[in-house]
Image (cartoon, rainbow, N blue to C red; front, side):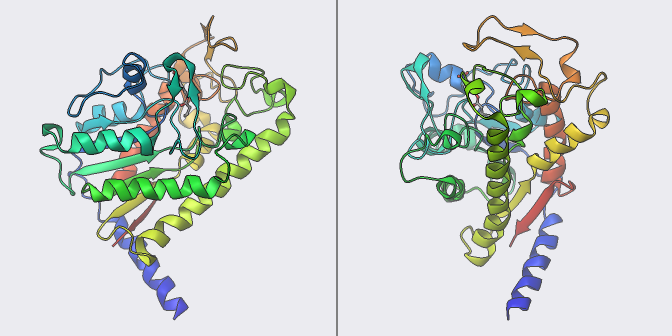
Length: 345
Ligand SMILES: CCCC(=O)Oc1ccc([N+](=O)[O-])cc1
């Protein structure tokens, strides 16, 4: 009985790869943090921590946390898809699990469950979504960098009683909400290889010292914390790998839906290991381009071109890397990426 179930799940996975119509990608709806935000936090920052009214899109920026465009903007540029981006810099999945204070707003950074999903649900009822169908819209979720961060689980700063499993459950709750609103095509981008970013890499291996995202890093055992970050991200990604087919196929949690897992962790690691296949010479995968003081002020860029860098700053992929993520994301949606795992009914 057990082997029959395994064989049938395997077949389901293979079939799903060919069920992504290459032409039917008219809308991209994104949820996440600064890896994805194209200007939404700016709106909250200038409107007393409130989001835009239903049916109104905030102004976009072309200088995001990547130093330029962010990956969904590149996806839109390449595919012509309409983009609705709910991602907010600084966001966690749910402020009821990990909340992070944004002093400039005198409020917590908005989170997916408390702000991004309610905004999406309100917009969903407006003319913005008139042409959106289950078949022509792809919903992308990339969240967790702040949940696991030094201001989150890494320093045991989560709400008492919550943990990595709570973060994972929030991913499934996010899919529940999108599914309820008619979404059927999901891409989950897993956790970045955070042990490689300057923020968590030890200084002995070219990482940053005290910085705007971790102001007293030099007081810690940096090798231990890089290893913890590797443990957290790889363990959470393994739970995602098993959790998607379990919820979708065994528990039948989202009947009729298709989900692709985009293994960003491996994709970024590939850029790190083989930069000449991706970046402009002279390749720089250990340093970063944008250097600021611990208050995020007095910033200086370079040396060289941002196109040579894997990372923009201590935490964020460069906009060259975001263009590569976008290129691979489009292959994931088409069912053509070796970094995609596909599940569906
Ligand atoms: C990928 C998660 C890191 C993140 O969200 O970083 C940021 C947090 C806050 C700001 N901000 O307040 O401008 C920017 C990036």
